[in-house]
Length: 257
Image (cartoon, rainbow, N blue to C red):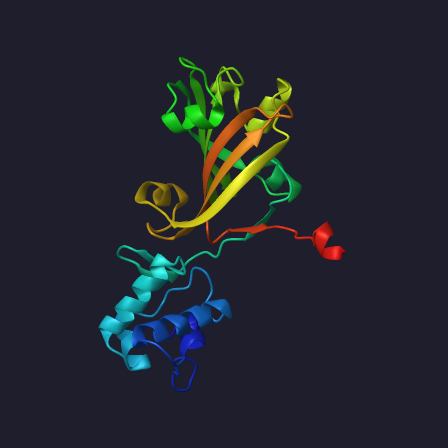
């Protein structure tokens, strides 16, 4: 019997948490074992037959619980090898009160970051880009799309659109878009961000190396120059299992009176 097997089952009877369908009880039991560190990232889960026998449930129940855990990123299945505890990503907190680039934000935490460029080109704008960026007829848009990675972990997909009057050649963007904009005096000074929860489509899920349908954060940022002109329109997808957005709230002046 493996150490992981012994840690999971122990020597006594398995008591599932009560409430809800049996497969969800089993799912919560395995989640709790992972959360407590009884089984570690990389440990193999016992076979479907072994789990069913030891927990005294059907193999269908085990299969449904495991499928849910794979979808949630707790477990990972490797064809021909079995089911394993997935690597647990380091969570990153990002403040909503400061306007920084992804590279600047990660550098402040001492975390190395790199980008895989998915697109750097000049295109006719979409109707949404024309409206948001306030483009004139015939004006074109520069698009910069990147997969953002820290260590070996893909964290986010960023898709930025800017007027070519601000960024004539998107090919010059390297680590930081904002560092490039600062060179030309076009770094934004404020922005409005809208954040919503969503489930990942297959293409984005593949890039972020998590299952399709997994939880994600979709973030839309419209950034402005001091003059009030819109300089950046970025739509990003962040992994829901790695990112926490934090805002400091203060009591308004009227409430103090």
